[in-house]
Length: 340
Ligand SMILES: [Fe+2]
Ligand SMILES: [Fe+2]
Image (cartoon, rainbow, N blue to C red):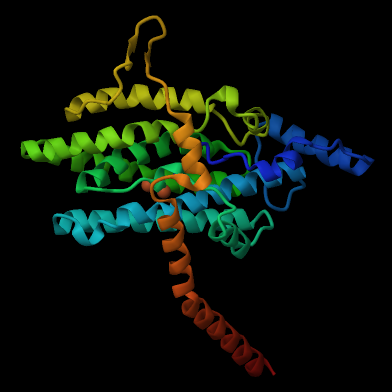
């Protein structure tokens, strides 16, 4: 998932990001010129290349927020694996949730190429310092929520993530290519599950509509604050990290989703949503940004539950990490002994 624009400002670090110091000596000036030329030519920056400190910090923040979102995002749907209504739905859901875990792992690996360890990134998540996508702090109350997450949340993720396949940082761009292919499966399985429910009983159709009503607005907020309130966006665009603005992505998502809702037979819960002939786009109502910021800052419906579950899973897995390290040590000793 799920850059809401996976780069939520962190007030503590803003000062260092905004103050990009000018290069001081001739070597630095040369490095900066080479970096700028590569970006201007739409080339890739690789881990061994020189890069400005602010570029590195921005990427670590964005990639780690993205990784955390994938990992925390396993929880709302994981709740339903044991309650899926058929073996087929259970197998699909298991595969999807495992994909999300895999996305997290690729992204932590991409983050590590920037010189920040996985332990550091996880520690920031577990202590509540790091952000993750606001959307995963909402509860999954019914089976229809699982379908709606696939259709809308993964659908929004694709909108957000396809442009990141062209990100200027090589390891992030390459990780996103595989991730986007899997997100496409996630979106389609969600839509197909909802289609099945919409051909069911009136109670099933009502359950789908209720889930759409609860998820629609938080999904629109996932794209991040309006462009006017996104001070880092311009720099992200200059560096080739961000390619399309939050508002433009949100608009693309609304325009793509309205016809899909019509096919499903659900109503999107926005009385102001209608086609604007002049703009050739949909107009839509006002998003509750207070709710968004409250959720991002830890006060959403499930924030503390999500974090507590994550920390417990990490602690419960300590013996696996210890065993893997002990095994690696033993193998190394054996190799050294054989070589002697
Ligand atoms: Fe994902
Ligand atoms: Fe996904």
